[in-house]
Image 1 (cartoon, rainbow, N blue to C red):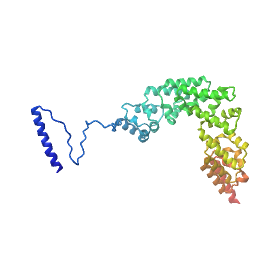
Image 2: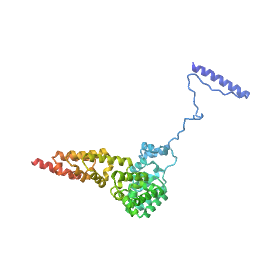
Image 3: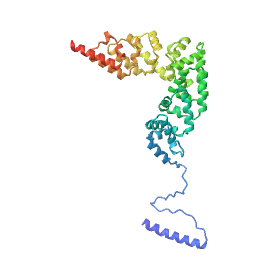
Length: 388
């Protein structure tokens, strides 16, 4: 019935239009709506205020990346807009990296983890690469940085900033060993602006003077040699940790200075809350086992890496060593026992326990043996047991 009505109305409309054309009279505009039928939407109709016209992905780029083995799911998650660009340099990047010793899988991995790499032109890549190579020595070493930390290497095309950073660190008297380690293990340092790096260095030099140090540059070299990542952390984080260390560990300025430029340097990377939580966790466990304040402070001062463990991990490791027959004093004197992963520690304890090893009388140091040496020892214990 609806279709019939629509046919009649359409026919009348066409007739009116013909008459109007002959008489050159304008036809009044109106909207035709058929009951029960949704209003037709023509593509020329403007988008409503809540509709957004989304650009389409560059099909050629998507196809090219697929053929290269790039993980497009990861790519879209990191930088989906990049797939809509009309001009990119993924093929140039691939050829450049292959020429430097990469394989296709490595190239795909780099692009998947840092999509912005495909926006770099050949001239920029070549110039950046040569600058890094001057410090690191070989294409292989530079490639290892680009593979491990693509964001650091491909993040910027500002070669001028890179050169300024290199010159600045050299002006501080940093030995080539530290400069190489900075580029190799903490390349993000060179993606920082020169002003930001100056701010970090100024803070560390000032800290040395503040704590009574006489040689700020030597202090800087010592800290960097122990903690190569320090310049990638915010000044506020480092300062908060220093204040926290001083308060919780009850250190005077001289002791704090010595600790920071030696064993305590890696702890400066932690967030304030993480440092505080881990310190209180270690303190609580050792206190519950009868350790004195002096023993706890000395243990943390000489082995600050213990603060890199969460309270739960630390407690689990200590309990595992105690349960097998070890003593608290022995644990404090052999902090390397706590370096092992929990799974590895428990596995070693189980191997030795099953062959009758007596931890209480023979000690815990056997757990520090490599897996191969431990396996050999366990075999000898089994053999001696069978002879008895």
